Image 1: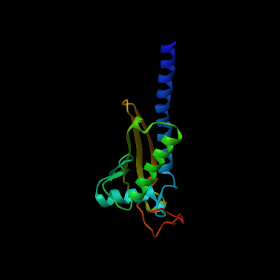
Image 2: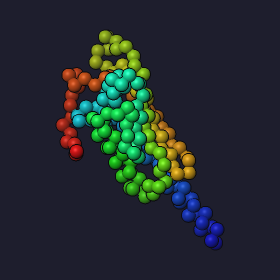
Image 3: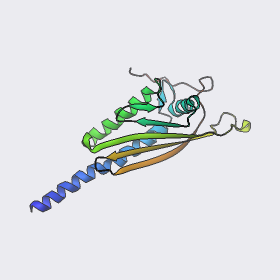
Image 4: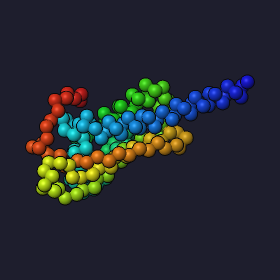
Length: 165
């Protein structure tokens, strides 16, 4: 009987860890959406601008330690929002924080030359990949591609969303 109860308990604990994949899916889908904005402008466009400015077509966001590489003060808002979202989902799902050992978003840009005939359409592909690893070494990884253009406030509409400091 004791062995049976322990096996049930172990399965329940393991099933909680599996919820990390659902959380990863929610984060990555929100991350590429138009609702991901930084002070009113689309976060993906701002990230692409960071890539161009830093001359590195890769950005890494550590959601646990709230670090973005290369560093960028303005995009710290985006990092904080998604870190807060991660931990709120963990709490909501009843997952212990110690089950989480790694949570990163890797963004890689693939620039293309804009085609004049396409006008204001987004010519650059961005691959966004989230990796969440639990304390047992199991990784949950999802990636999505999105098309964007470099941030340009003259060509973009700004949202009226309010931001906490």
